[in-house]
Length: 349
Image (cartoon, rainbow, N blue to C red; front, side, top):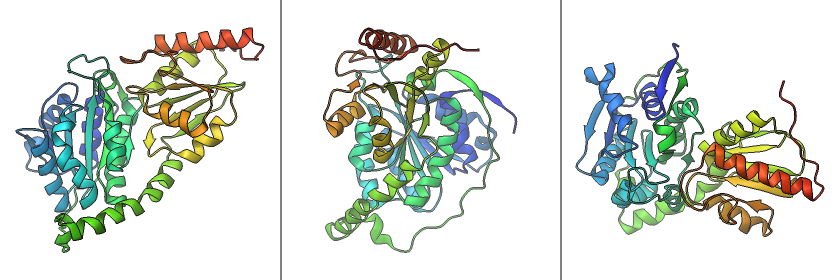
């Protein structure tokens, strides 16, 4: 397929189109607006193949997308982070009903509040609802995750959250698409009780959601979106989503020979994290948004090996950048050298 120069938001849109969506519903809000605009301007929007609509608010957008999913069709729903507050009722209940056709919720967070009233982290909602979360590190991964999200949604019969941020959404990179798939046929389930959350049905569905959690963890453990870049020494980095891109930029530009664990699919792959973290005495946690995973890792290991937003190694608020990670990594390396740890830059040929 021909390569394309795309914004991160456009890469998500292209991935959804190539995944065979039948509809996209959204409420406009930076940095998510360009996703729906790209789909509306595509050739698919000219033909009656992809239903596209701006909703009155995020809740009605989510409900419309959920209805299309109940009919067996794949559907994308887009909003910014604060919009998920408005959609929370429908969103939380959709984890209990489950889905029929693939349903991917794209939530665009806005660290540093470039055009928002807060910088709340949508990963809290994903964990609250107990659904899979995908967090791309770059534009190519945004495309691939948008495609994969629909497959995963149908595999586990749950909505999937795709969490992006302003910097990824509004920056461009070359993306290599793959061949598009056909749309799903109309395939509504005959068991209507799944969608009607009377207490008797809701209790049964909720038990089913709890039973799926081990499957979701196993999928995350085996995900190619979670990977290790090997390195030497007693220091390491665990980076989430776009922070992986920043960390790799610093490691590459300075020729640092330190290991990096990249996490872009949740729930947390606990076995992978444990195997990695047990090898190192000092680990920098880099995640865009709130220190959600840093808090969990500190609690899980119960020691002070982790550095990040909570101890001031990285700023407690605002978006990350390569410069901030550079300062944190090189400063930590200098301290380690002062105490005798053998961590030094290597020559890049």
